[in-house]
Length: 209
Image 1 (cartoon, rainbow, N blue to C red):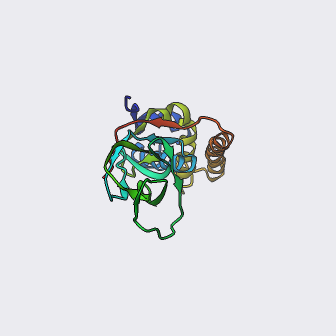
Image 2 (spheres, rainbow, N blue to C red):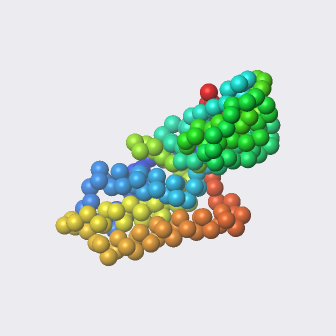
Image 3 (cartoon, one colour):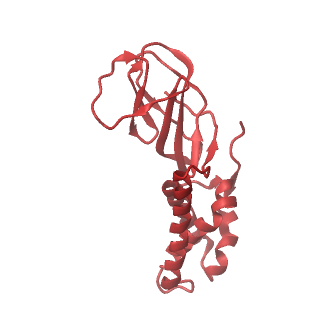
């Protein structure tokens, strides 16, 4: 399956420049990126379903390598042999061999299978991870602009309007823009809870090791 189409942060500029008179583009761009990161983390809208991967005897720990310019926010699902594994808390578990039926998230993108695989197997492990743009990303998935661009722009405007003593300073309007951002995130989370399909998924040949 093809990768997601990507766009640069400049493609968002028409959504907010008219509200920020004389605000330099180099000041806008980092806030756009930060707003997109916050949006992805809070809404969990960008999800990455991995290709089926191999597992190895007595190897419990598997690390997901995200696509370029992305970072892992959380691991939502792990499947082994097409069976969804049970998530465990951070309790101490013994690395005993067997057929994995559970998993622990050691940190975003790092999972430990419980029990450890007792034999090498090909194409049996798959995860779904929530992603966000990396802190230095120069681009983001196009669907963020197409479907959530106004919300992300509101998040950036809310922060920029708080900068004091500038032509674009507007603390009162900042609160309005922040509410638009918060409401946009909340709408996605509510639809998810109701069983909606608001999450963009990408299959992109990740790496486990």
